Image 1 (cartoon, rainbow, N blue to C red):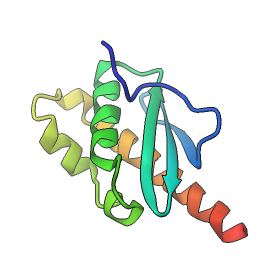
Image 2: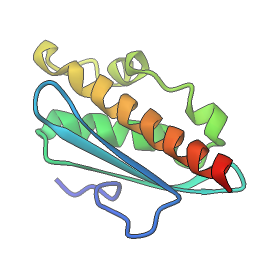
Image 3: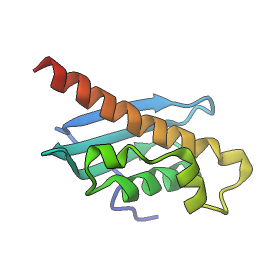
Amino acid sequence: MEDEYFGRMTDPSAGAWHTGACGDTMEFYLVIEEGVIRKALYHTDGCQFTRLCGRTVIEFIQGKPVREALTISAGYVLEQLPDLPEAHRHCAILSVLTFYKAIGSFWVEAAQL
């Protein structure tokens, strides 16, 4: 599955990773300029459903001001992916949580400047 949003960055403005209870690890990398998410990538060692959720988050947040991007929720991801199997609904939570952590790390670093 070719995915333009899948990958890692060497020098992002923000990044975070989280390992879910299922054992999958999700990573988010963000380039934030003037309060806008200009570029975003995700990476995971998880299954196709984890990747699908990561991509859905990226499609929502990229190009948006940070505060608007923070309106995303696991519920939104699940609405966009109605055929996501019940056993993989946690992938939506993992994706959104990891994005939130990346924004949190960005704000913490900005506060220290």
